[in-house]
Length: 116
Image 1 (cartoon, rainbow, N blue to C red):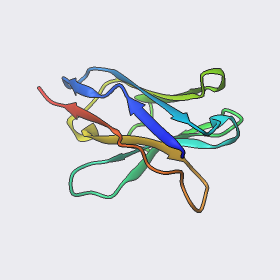
Image 2 (cartoon, one colour; image 1 turned 30 degrees about the horizontal axis):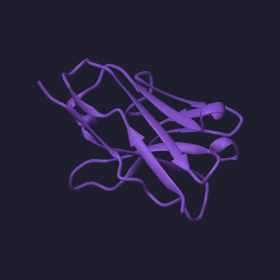
Image 3 (cartoon, rainbow, N blue to C red; image 1 turned 90 degrees about the vertical axis):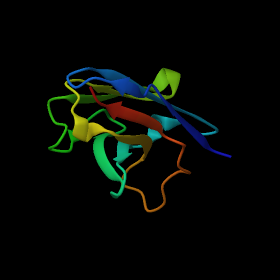
Image 4 (cartoon, one colour; image 1 turned 60 degrees about the vertical axis):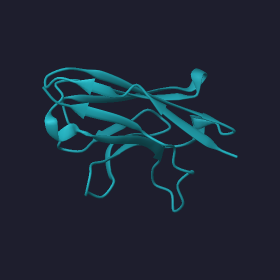
């Protein structure tokens, strides 16, 4: 069974940084277009960054210039570097595929809380 595991979240002050990591068992990320999603309380899950299998990246306007998505195919991992964090970035962050009809089973996500 495919299992995605996200890590790296935590409590950080506004303006701070975090680096999220995503790995998986029983699936190779190399051939997939991958993305980082987030879901804040009371809101729908939204895609904030994506990286294609060839390396091209795209970002939601709300995080552009602050977040950087990357991948390491040798480690079967996808990362999200988050800088200049704001209170509105507080959410549970998930990684999964993009541009597919049926995503992979969702992991538990990693909580990011931005607060002073």
